[in-house]
Length: 172
Length: 277
Image (cartoon, rainbow over all chains, first blue to last red; front, side, top):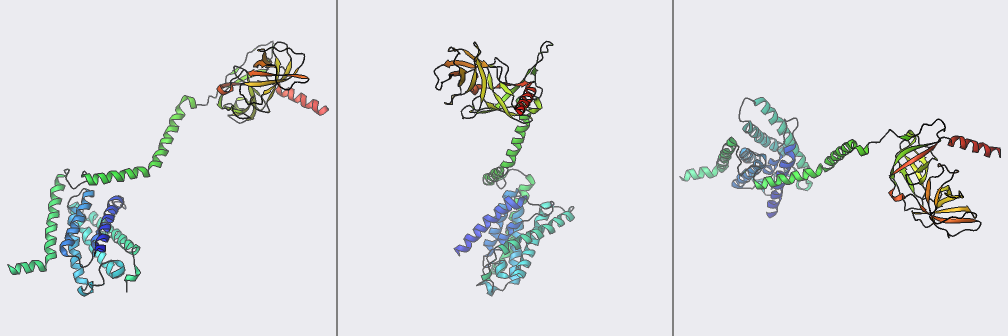
C-alpha cells in the first residue's frame, strides 16, 4: 500500500516537472502541445476512492495552473477527466478483476484497452481544456485543430511512456 | 431524506465532480478575469523560485554559446585597437647622397617574442619578407648588436640572438683595431660575452669599447660591449677577454634589421673563389 502511495507521489512530481519544464516549451507549429501530466490521473489504482480521486485531480490541475498562470483552467479539466475516468472504468472493467489488477497500466491491461482508455480520456480533457481556454466559439476551427493534434501528441507520449515502463511479467 | 442520501452516495462521483468543477470555475473566472497577482501564479514564491532555478540551469547550458559570443566580440573590439594593427609601412632610413652609394638600409621592427635564459635564445620580430627582411641579415638595436636573421616568413622573422652558442660575430677593439670574435660566455649570463682570438699585440684596457669590425655583416663600428676583465680563461697564442654586452636583451623592444645591399655580390664573389680553389 505504502509502495503504491510512494510510486504515485513520485509520478506526480515527475510528471508535473516534465510538463512544466519540458513539454511547456514544446509546441509543433503552435498547433500541437502535449499535456502529458494527465497520465498521473490515468494511472491511479482502480480501487482509489472517488473522493481521493477528485481531490488528487483537483490538486494536480491547480499545480499545473500555478505554473501556467491560468488558475482554475487545468483544475476544471482535470476534474472532468476524473469524472470521465470513473465512468469509463465502471463501464469497461469488471469489479471482480480488481484483486490482481491494481493499476490501469499498459502492461497490465493490454494495448487495446489502454489505448482506448487513454484516447477517450485525453479527448475529453483536451476538448474541455482548449475550449475553456479560448472561451469563445468564433475560433472554433483553429481550436479544434489544436485539440485534435494535441490529443494525438499526448496519446503518443502516453503510449511511449507506457512502453518505456513495460513489465512483461505482469501480463498473463 | 434517506432516499436523498442513498441517491447521493450512489452517484457520488457525479456530485464530487460537480463540487470540484464548480470550485475550478469559480477560481478560473475570478482570477483570470482580473489577471491580478494572486497566490496561484508564478509570482508565488515557490513557483517563482523554481522558475529561477530552471532559468539558472538554462543559463549554464548556454554558457558556451555566450562565451563564444563574448570572445568574438572581444576579438572584434581588439581588432579595432591600434596596437593590433600591423603597421605595414616601413620607414626605411636612407640618406640620398650622390657621392656615396648607400650600402646599408635599416628596417625598423618590433620584438614580439624574446628569451634570454636558455642556452640558445631566439627573438621573433614583426617584419618579414614582405618588408625586405631576408635570411642572414644583421639585427641591431639602438644600443648595439642583437643578432642575425635565421628564418623569415611573410610577416615575421626569427633572429638568432647573440645569446646563442653558435652566434659569433667579428669584432674589434675600438681604439687599436685589433680583430677578434665575440661570442656568448659559457656561464649563460645575458650581460656577459667573450671576445676571443685577439692577437697578443693588442693592449686592451678595461672599459675599452668593443665594436663590430669591417668583416662582419654589420657596418663597422656598431657597439657590442665594453671590456670588463682581461684574465679570462683560455689564452695561449691569443688574448681572450670578457665583455659587458651593450644590449640589455631582456628589455629589447625595437630593433633594426640591417640590409646590406652588397651582400649578394659579396656572397657571389666568395662562392666563386671557393669554386676556383
